Image (cartoon, rainbow, N blue to C red; front, side, top):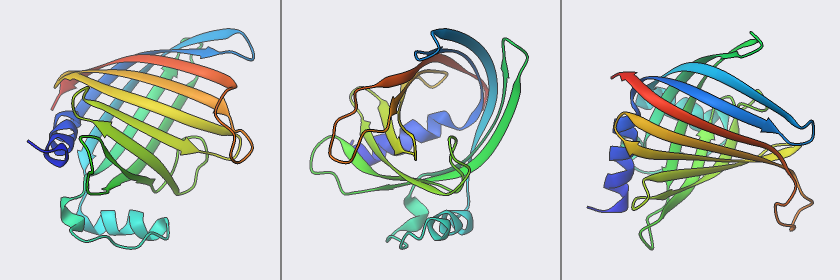
Length: 186
């Protein structure tokens, strides 16, 4: 099975309703916060995929229908009782793989850190069943990892770095997050 088929299977397993328990470590404030999130992932139509492309000023690639595109909606409650909700559409435009690793662009019609369309980079390792997404925001660079342990369990890791000057490597971590995500039903 090639990496594109494995990528499709990864997302097929992710469709459904999920619950997650996360811990965030804010390093600059030396603070730890826990939260509970309920979220749902559903496929989107080709029409919505085209809108995500248009919102990002991205040319329509060949075989648009075959590209993984999903709607994500979630509600989070922190241990302090603070509530947040967010919904977005996302699309993964991959390059033909030169190796086992699949790479490409990860487009959203509304990003998390900044409420605007966003193009990020992704890398999928089918052997580890890990999706790594790197988003460069105005002030931070977010490196988000989702590892699919089985169709009902995902492990999430989030590292946010202060955005370094162009050409310099990521070094200054400001946030570390960990999560255990369990599917409640498909």
